[in-house]
Image (tube, rainbow, N blue to C red):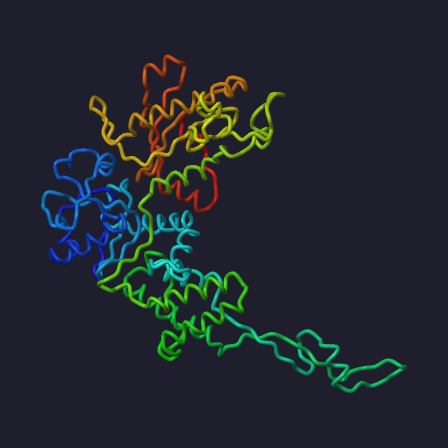
Length: 477
């Protein structure tokens, strides 16, 4: 299989993609259709290449199938993760990685972050077909089966056996009724007792089926050169072939019956995954299908990472915050920090709307009030030059409004300082101070300028994956 690295939100010409994918124009059109169908690829007019990538993606123009082969447009990948399509493995890495040609180490960590962020959704998506949905995504199924095996072991059905003088639980009723006793001083003594213990059934149909599929999956991931990327060890558990378990309909019938009698959550999930795998068949190397692991909303992943490592307190009540805030008597301890933001009032209805401003994250630490906004941008900021690729005016004005929304709370509780900051990902090794952004009329209202910091993404991921908090002092606000 052909394996290539692609940078998110970079413009690629048709010629470049044909060379990377080692394909003809007709093959490229097929691949483009598949990628476009799942929102992984967008078209961009070549005249807009000089604009920054974030604006570029927002203003892409979609065209019908008749224009797929037009040379007037470039292609932009809006996805971070692995895509397997038409015998090609596309490894899409985030846009902030500028200086790498073979970002295997970076991608390993990024995939762990995506998996943690999106683990529940991935499990649900890969089993959609079992519940009646026609979509099926093979790659997450293969990854789940391997990871579940290393965490929980092979699928096992145990059976009870009864022994004489065994080491298991003593069956007193069976012992009394079916064995002889010796009386001594009017007390019965049993020279043989009946015991029960449970052993794993090594010849269980579903255990063997699980081993067979795992061996097959491991080989398929190895052939696609994905085991190392996901840091998974190859396994070979059996020499049995899938056809030895019966035809497709028979295997599905057995799995359905087993599901009806299993109530263990993990066993049910494994059985449903095996069911989906058998029902669809297919291989990663298939030239007709598409499979993927990742997200086309990596900005949400970055936002989640920042919330976790900087201890987002928006959903905490004032009662929970009393250790870091000196509350006033009029404070309602059950009120959440997010609820302090006013909602729009509509006079005709005499009611407030449900929606209002929602900051990415608020943190109160050492009597300082921090307003952070995780921005997935890669700006070009050079002294004396107009900024490019920066957060837009909407982001800047909203960030000021967040501070204004909390002004009464901040004033009432006399915080030592208020800090407002954009957090951008970077491939650098240290936090970089990118200055600040301000609007004069907002500054004249007494609002703080918005600081801008680029945070090493790999450092943020380490804290996120280990469930640790980042020292706010590292941001030097």
